[in-house]
Amino acid sequence: MTSCLERCQRSISADCEAEGAEIWRDPEGQFVWELLCHPAVIAYYERHYPFAPPLLLRAAGDRRLPDTYRSQWQAELEQEGFDAAYRQFLHLNARFISNDVIGYFIELLDDFYVFDTHIDEFRRVLEQRARLGGWLTRPDRWQLLEGMASFYEFALDLEQYLAALEFPMLRGHVWLHFAYWFGNGGARMEEVALWLQNAVAHAAEDESIDGAELGEALARLRAPQRYPLVLIEQTAEVLGPWLESSGVGEQLSAGSRSL
Figure 1 (spheres, rainbow, N blue to C red):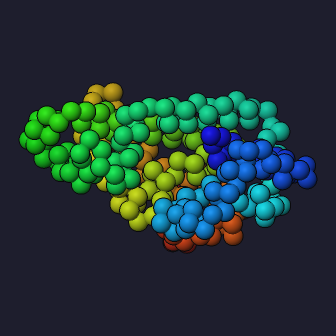
Figure 2 (cartoon, rainbow, N blue to C red):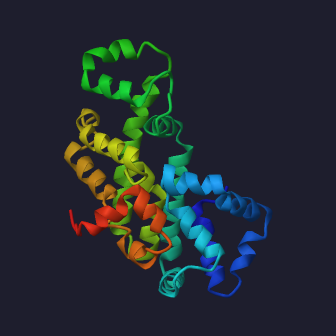
Figure 3 (cartoon, rainbow, N blue to C red):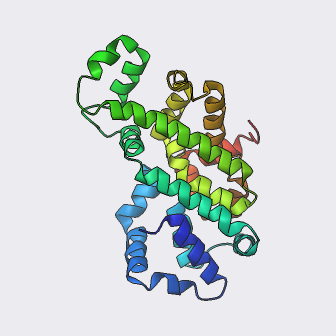
């Protein structure tokens, strides 16, 4: 299915030409729209598992996006280099969703049991390495360790991409697309993100990963003051439910503008 960011790009671009409703008339668009507007789904991404992109999509479909946001986004769409930067996002996203071991690991982060393992048990195994041998006797559990390393490698590449991106609105959209997994999906994911940041020493045993660099990258990816701030400031009213339920609004109101 088309990513939220891709559909939002198409919707907002069309909306700037007074044809925003067209994007929802194809069968896939109608299906996405019905899901976005279903009360149970709204409760899911607004309160229980806070996620910002659906709020922007709904606002685009309802023509509720602020004019300043729409004009700046449209200006970026027309700038030289935007298409190449956007393709980089698509490559990153494809890598994220097609990597099986990352998939297993993020299911673990999201409180599922994977290969008969819960994240609490996984934490204990990493903290008490004497248990690792026995834990690995179960089939496929090694994929969780590999998934953790792959997740960390992805985080480094994502942060490098965001840091180099010269399009503030695109940068904000990309950050929002992945922000849930870096601690901005409510209290539970905040706890998980802090644990991931504290657990980098275990990944750093792999000589290909610099523990200090990784820890700093994860901290930057968690911070809403850094990469998405321009986008959040221009769409704060639309993103209100996410800002409140994810804790991001509280982080921003604390006045921390730098790491």
